[in-house]
Amino acid sequence: MLFFLDTANVREIARCFDLYPLSGVSTNPTLIAKEKRPFYDILSDIRKVIGAAPILHVQVLGEDADTMVEEAKQLRDRFGSSILPKIPVTPQGFKAIGMLARLGFSVTATAVATPLQALLAAKAGAAYTAPYVNRIDNIGGDGVGVVANIVRLFTASGLPTKVLTASFKNVQQVQDVALAGAHAATMAPDLLDLLVKHPLTDSGVAGFNADWSSAFGPGVTTLDLVSV
Image (cartoon, rainbow, N blue to C red; front, top):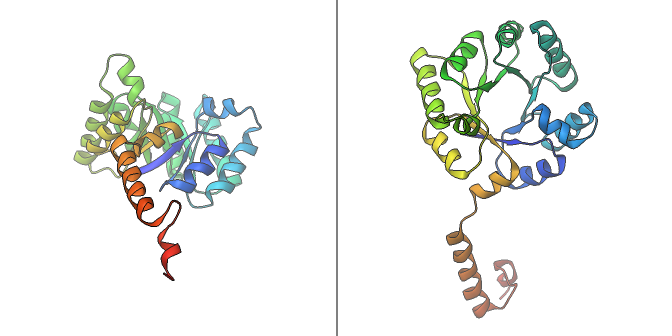
């Protein structure tokens, strides 16, 4: 399973990429707007932090297919092929996904709420589909169930499209979509931190350190004992 960071905050991106095995960054118009900085400056800074190879998902804003395609072309011209345009699964979006796929783009179909939307996007040529897990839950649906059904449809149809799950509020949702067969997940930095947080881990490490310190002294590591 691939892990992506869902933010446009460059400081948080730098912190998380220093710590965790991430495959890239996913942004959306809301996250970009929060930064209150010029759009292309934000993308340039993100690319500087993560390097040229990791994927950067960036959403287009056009409402018609032709505009979406032109936005995607401009993004690729400025930032290279590892920028994946995010195209919403509207009627014009499906058209744009097909147009971009024929031009050799890898496309992320976003704002997915149903398995059939995901299937149509995959048939149009999307490289990723992004179902919104928690948003589906919030309207009385089953976000994890939708993800599981998308995975089943892609497998049954022999489609190579990956399921990039998004919109999480807790660690359990992330674990459940992983068990359902999702290929990737994108999440906010604070939730990513919670994936590795557990009181048993903290107490175990604290106990080891206390026992070691009582024997060898506080702050001593194995590096300090080489010549002893």
